[in-house]
Amino acid sequence: MNRLNDFSKFSPEVAVQAAESFDTPLYVYDEALIRERCRECVEMPQAYGLIVRYAMKANSNRTLLRLITDEGLHLDASSLNEVRRAGLAGIPYERIMLTTQEVHTGADRKKLEELLLNGLRYNACSLNQLQQIGAFATMNNIDVGIRIHPGIGSGESATRNTGDDYSCFGIHLSDLKQAHEYAEESGLRFRHIHVHIGSGADTKMWRQNIDLLLGIIEEHFPDADTVCFGGGLKEARMPGEYAADVPLLGSYAKMQIEDFYNKTGRKLKMEIEPGTYIVANSGYAVTRLIDKKKTSRSNFIITDGGMEINSRPLLYGSKHPVYIVSSDGARVISSEFDEAKHDFEAVVAGKCCESGDCQTLDMDGHAVPRSMVEPNIDDIVVIGGVGAYCSSMSPYNYNSHPQIPEVLFTTDGKLKEIRKRQTLEQMLENEV
Image (cartoon, rainbow, N blue to C red; front, side):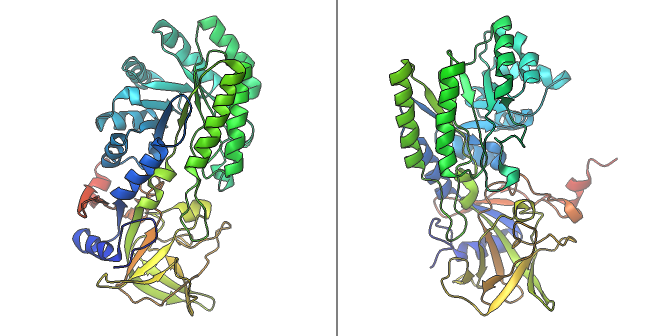
């Protein structure tokens, strides 16, 4: 039995079994690969302590949150509702850090205060947030973290760069004086210092971020005992792409933190916040080929799942591997990992009424055909690398399509449904 790629135990036979058991389209996640990625991060080199926080916005399914935290990871939440969601999954609040663009008022403000008293960690990402939470934090002896906007960043696209001056995340270096003045007036201490430069950041930029943040801490934050280098660890979805070398990055961070100690006498604990790296390649969208069309320029194969289950090609020009699987699941007919060049080329399109509903778009939004063995209607078409920012981010009710099921391919070889398919009645139940 051949596998769909070289990093997963997921096989074409399992894809067909999932399609037959739960209908298409659906997501399938490989538990073994998620656990492997978690352990790789937890075991990365470190100097004086390490916390790995899973960026739960990548995929916040309850079963996956429990699986990931069982491997020793903490959580990074980007909204108060993500914190609530993690709490409902049984994750202790003291294992969650909230780093958000939100400014909480009314009932949300009361809930935030309640959660902070129950151990939730909080990163201030603006002067306004800092001033809103400062008095409460001081009164209850709660240390507040601070997210720094460094003015430089890196990402796989402009929209995934969160550190340069075209993004608005964190307190800019030019505002640090005001932040310190407020902290001194209110009695706040900044012990947790955080920078995140972008998703899929270049390795060289990630190392520069380590140096930059340690320099900022040395100059501006004498009380800091924890440094968070953010997430954005690059994952390789396609042939020819290279994933971040986590042990190598850990070794560099360890060396620099030890050098910081030798210069200052201060031992810093380290945090990182991977999301994509943990779950991206564990995920597969299993779809069925429902139609074939052509124009004077291109062949199109139409699947029953497209932008409503994976919007990353439309949003970012992201590339995902495409596999055509035989109807009996015995083999992969065509794969991005094939070395052979096939005569047939086709654009992989979905069923939405939208020209951008293609899984094979370039950075400019143009449909680009992929080389493949010509498939037949009813063949299984699997889209790889969809474990991160697909289920959690895609516009699944566009054209009134229901949210699709999520299934875990367990380490003992079973398929376990972890989210049911949404019904039309559920889609409409809040309309009045």
